[in-house]
Amino acid sequence: MEFVVKEEFTGKSAASKPQRTVIAGQTWTRKLRCTDPACVVDHAGGEQHDFEKVEDEGEAGPEEEEEYVAPADRIVVPLDVLAPIPEKGEECVYIVGTRGVKVTRIAGLEYLADSLQELVLRSNLIAAMEGVHTLIKLTKLELYDNQIEEISHLKSLTRITILDLSYNAIRSMAPVACCPLLEELYLAQNKLKVIEGVTGLVHLRCLDLGANRLRSMGGAGLETLASLQSLWLGKNKIERIEDINALPCLRQFDCQNNRLTTLVWDADESEDGAAGETEDSSAVTSSRTGIADLTTLEELYLACNALHSLHGMPQRSPLSTIDLSTNQIDSLEGIHALQHVTELWMTASRLATFEDLEPLKALPELECLYLEHSPIAADFEYRMRVTAMLPSLQQLDATAVSRR
Image (cartoon, rainbow, N blue to C red; front, side):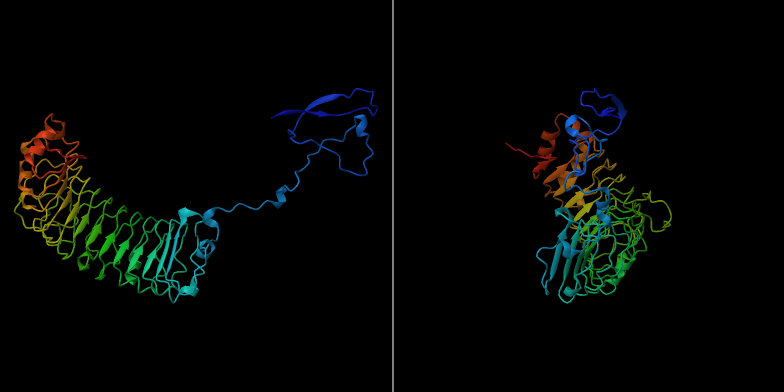
């Protein structure tokens, strides 16, 4: 507490010396003055009133201060942000919250119901999808990076082909079944535990469920997605690849940062059993498990799992990019069948000798190879011998190959 001097005068005579005492109080930052026109105190003689705080001109008192409202609790609709206001007949509304004021409610767009086809409200503070149901002509709805906990109000949006609800707090995706024409569905970084609502979405080309809490692919209807080209399941808790082995159009598959220990499961293995590599490499795998029977796969991302071998790779697919980084692979046996590979990423593998790399000679189109943080990369002659071994190589790790 700060101590200041308050002057108290005991006499009215200008000749008498005032007595001063020190009391605890507020530090006054402005010069105090008397504004009472009826004042009879002789200020010229040194007499003063008791000190009182004088408010700054124009300064609002406590009773005039507005109550603070958190941004998420404010009511801000798209028309509060858009400038100029869209005219009737507008086909697209696009608002990114990082550019300024954030939208909290979807409202006020009803007059665009007959024309609006794309609604993008990215990185705002929207907590509910209420308000989209009137926009029946929508073909694209993007509510990426908001605060939505439940998918709702989609029953009237039968024309939707692109739905992006990534980076929210959604726990169930079942309502997406209301959109039979969906071609792209993005639900990454939510709180999903089960794949739901996709059975029969025959037009779906891209499905992104990365960074959720999924443990299983089985029984979700993935085998019915006849048009699916890209499937992203990275950063989940999946132990077993199921129901995609017969997909006729799958080109990209991402299952990195999961719990895979093998790509081969016994046909008789119980679905509830722990996934593990079969002892007999000639064993017939279930048509519902693995990726060995895929014929169209071009990109495969399986980094950050616990794979020990390449057994179970899709040898009939035109694979060009394979990411097997941060696994426990110590042998390249079987890679000779993947003749179209141009990029092979095996960072932090267990490949330790140049003999382990011999199978790579069978890949005539290999241009990019990553082996950094593997035991072989510590060899003094690593770059020289690997580039000499693979004449088609143009990049080794993060450095271009020089052949002077």
